[in-house]
Every structure is written in structure tokens, then in C-alpha cells.
Image (cartoon, rainbow, N blue to C red; front, side):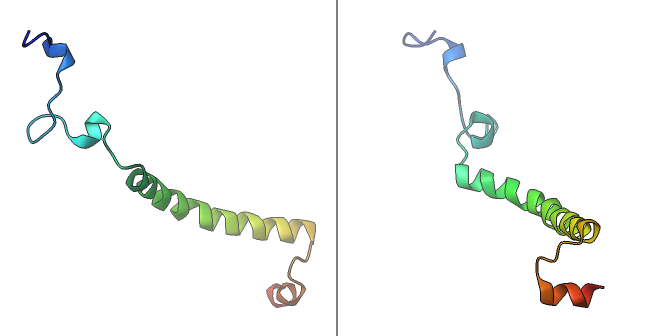
Length: 71
């Protein structure tokens, strides 16, 4: 114990100890950006393909001018 604190109550952040990420001091916007890029990598192409397949299967013409170019 040091000045009323036990070693389980003390955390050291720095080189050779815990990083800010490990301790939970990460900026939320930076964390969100790191998650958005892989999500968009898979979601955008999948959404386009799923939308195209849905339009072909149902025959719904969302954009009437474009549907004549596709078929």
C-alpha cells in the first residue's frame, strides 16, 4: 500500500505498461471510423447486389429509364 492505495487500485498508462486503447481512453469518433470502413467494404456491394436481384425477381421498375438499359 502506498498512501492508502493498494496496487490493485493503481493503473499506469505509458510505454511498457497499458496503452490508451487497453485502458479505454480511445476517442469514440476514431473507434467509429475504424469500424465503418470494413462495414462499408462489405455492405455497399452486398446491398447493391441484393437490390438488383430483388428488382429482377419482382419486376419492379424503380427507375423506369434505367430498367430498359439493364435488360
